[in-house]
Image (cartoon, rainbow, N blue to C red; front, side, top):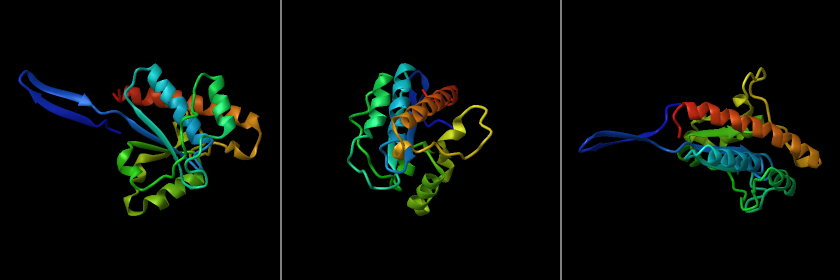
Length: 178
């Protein structure tokens, strides 16, 4: 992926500046996995002084307008990240134009992104979130959905997402998305 850049000709010469990286995390209902990923990556982006935009959405409208799941909020809060102000929204075809990279948390989500996008679907922008894991031997794997389990499942998912967000920072920071 090549970073977007703006070229301006000034009296002293050509000035090139890079646009902010725009990332969208997508899961099913936008209350468990994707809001955690949004919060964790936003936190890391700020720590690294990057000018990136990070958002999240769900492929279903079950929870539109709701705050993240209480266990998602709890585990993030334990790690110093407040996601309580996030609100669930549904993924829409216009998101393809708005974001540089779209991460699907699971196979069904990946398929739904393609379906929702219809003729606007730019699937070159979409990847499975777990594919960013360094030395990943299992391609196109799903992040487990902790919704139907207890609080411990959210802890496991948090740790997985945290590690992958580090990999995303490392990868795209090297590509001059600053």
